[in-house]
Image (cartoon, rainbow over all chains, first blue to last red; front, side, top):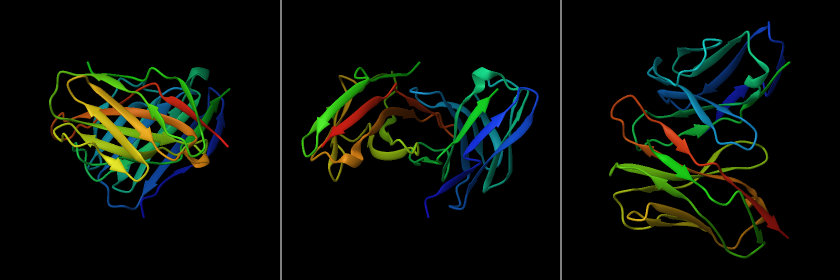
Length: 114
Length: 117
């Protein structure tokens, strides 16, 4: 099973709302990633978790708050977002964070901020 | 800083024909990996092929092969016997070894491949 699942598939939220994106994998991977992808652009790395600890934060605004409650689950908590935050949010996982480990991507959550 | 450049925003190929997608990168590192990812309209990113920089032999995966020119910092993808299911956005990506707990993929801007029946 090489599947990364993400819920919800689509999310529409107002600028004052609080919502969360969820990512799950059951491959025993210990590294998990959040990417943001705007239309017709490449994914941009936001956060990396290694063994449930945050190892990379790419200077992401604090209105995005990641959480890794266990080795299988990764959340992205959203609060007071701006319309320019509308994008596809991709989750990925890999066995470890080392160079040789392939990243497996989920299908993404399409977020629209109104 | 490492950069990845894909100079072909869009490409088109006839079914059963061969197409080559270009990618160049800039790095001062010697230990790195290069990847081609495919993102079909369903949006799930899939790894197509990867190349380890220290290996001179070009990687192949069925109908997909690469032409890795390390000195020229070039990494092109050749798709043979193109199929309708190959239609997708293709991203070239670079990853270097930062050591330990960090691992970052740097993507090019993508090439949108259309396959004509």
